[in-house]
Length: 141
Image 1 (cartoon, one colour):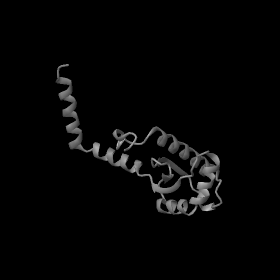
Image 2: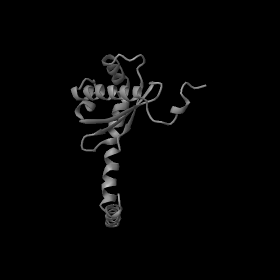
Image 3: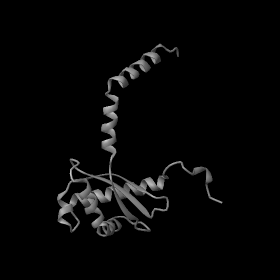
Image 4: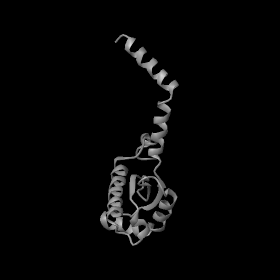
């Protein structure tokens, strides 16, 4: 039987969040300082938005985006090509029991925020939001 069966599906643990943030900071520092031997990757300005770690801390998914948003596919290819060197540098910086396998994905957070802004700026949505605000002001407390 599981130790804590009530925690299933409740999101990442404090440990996962902490390790993910440590990896994100270490990776950001490595990329900023240009510690890698790949000159193509060192020329890019990269934003590491988030690192999600699996519960067993064996796999870390890195969400990254090139500054300006151009060359997204090339960035993921370059990061994947240098995965072992990045992993070794992170392992030297952090004293983790196991060095997690790194997987790289595009950070689409900014695209989703732009889409949300676009949706909220539509006339029909603004009208609906104004109706909700008016109704909440009329409701007795």
